[in-house]
Image (spheres, rainbow, N blue to C red):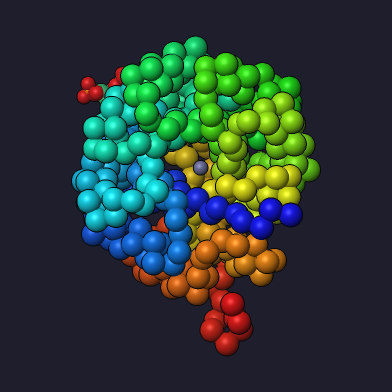
Length: 299
Ligand code: COA
Ligand code: ZN
């Protein structure tokens, strides 16, 4: 058993992007700094997308500048949908981005307003323009789409073949609307690992149907060592009807620590961070540990 699991926190992007009421920069920073203080080592801190599409993250430049200055060696990365976003991220000093494209043609259109061909051409352009930028491709709707339903494992593999042929080194398999089940996760992860042994892999799991933790564990037991989650379980794509929160980071860290995996995370600090977040954000928190009374909880 590989004992180390990297928990990749994406709450400051996925958790915040869906919230209508604007969260001031200072409060966003406090959440991010609480995550760092709890031992989280990888954070997707924002996205460089159109402020018309996602008004909440219109402060991406300011947040990035502050964080990179204060924590120059920390593993921050941002989501980008196009060259415009990649340029903004790169010029601020980021050297790692997630580039989002949906396996589903219709979700790609709803989310990014591009065809697959256009999205892949844009990806090529980003990789050629910024050769030292690490680009992880987020394959949204890998496990199912609100418009097109589920895809076969072959369809997933075919799409990843296109990415691999372009030189993509890391892929994030995303359950954008939380419709995966553990058997499906095991099957797809095993098939992808077999077909692309060199490809770095992550999973991005939503907890919409209360299967977030089971699906994340299925991915880990199928050999994935980098898993995404969000503080308090906030999350959801505004362009995917029915999407809601992600697997909660503190619940996931608790389970993994208790199972003997090394996450480097202090769960109690993370629970406090989630509780603080709930005081400043009127969101749909799906985390469990944050709701346990102190005398019920040993963790
Ligand atoms: N960041 C900020 N502004 C951007 C941008 C980016 N990455 N990309 C484009 N824009 C601006 C353009 O400058 C243009 O501005 P203008 O109206 O003032 O001239 C406007 O957005 C439209 O540009 P265009 O290239 O025609 O984009 P579009 O309307 O086809 O929208 C996206 C495409 C990708 C920019 C938009 O759909 C988007 O940002 N989607 C992100 C969705 C998302 O974050 N989903 C959740 C995460 S998976
Ligand atoms: Zn998501």
